[in-house]
Length: 257
Image (cartoon, rainbow, N blue to C red; front, side, top):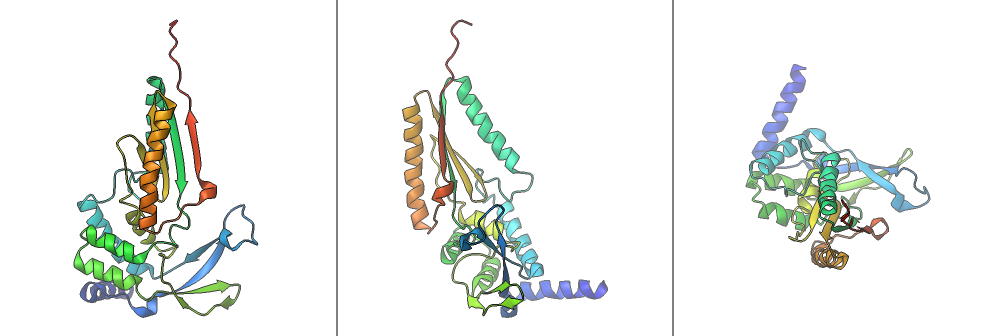
C-alpha cells in the first residue's frame, strides 16, 4: 500500500509540474454496449464505452470542480452531475411550475429536447473556447488541452481490436471527467424571461404558461428560435425522434364555490 501511495503522489506531482497528459494514456479501447430494448442490427443503437486512465481523470476532475464551485459557473438550471441535486429535484421544480399555473387558471406548454450523441459530438475547439471564457486557470486549461489532443480510439468486438484512429471530435463515454465537460459545453444555453428552462445533463425541458394557450405557445416558439441559432453555432444536433411537445389546458375556476 505504501508503494501505491508513492506512485499516486508522484503521479500528481508530474501532472502539477508539466500539465501534460501522457500520449501512452490517450488510446482508449472502446467496447460497444447495446442500448436496452434496441435493435442490435442498427449501429446507432450501440453506446461506445471507453475506460481511460482514472487516476489522471480524478486529478483533473478535482481541480475542475474546485474552479466551477468557487466561481459558481454552472448555470442554476442545470441539475445534472451536481452534488445534492438529482432528477427528482428537477422534476419537483417542473411540477411546481405547472401546479402554480393551474392555481392561476393558466395553461402550460412544454417542449422536451434530447441532444443527439451529446458526448460523441462535442466540438473540442468550441469547448476549449468556453473553458477560456470561464477563466479556467492556465495550468488546468493546458492540462485539459493536452487531454484532448491526439486522442486515439480502437474498437473491441469479441477478441478482435481494430486499428486505433485519431478522434477529432467528442469526449470519451466512460470518462469520469466527461459528464462535467458535457455540462460545461451546454452551460451557456439561452434562457428567456417568459419560459422555464430545466436541464439534467443534456436532457432539456422548456415550459411556458399563460391564460391564453396561444401566448404560451408563442413564448415556447420564441425560445426555440433562440435555441436553434445556438445549436447551429455550437454544432449541436437534436434527436428529432425523441423530441416531445405538449400543452395542458387551463383549469377553469369553479364560480359556484
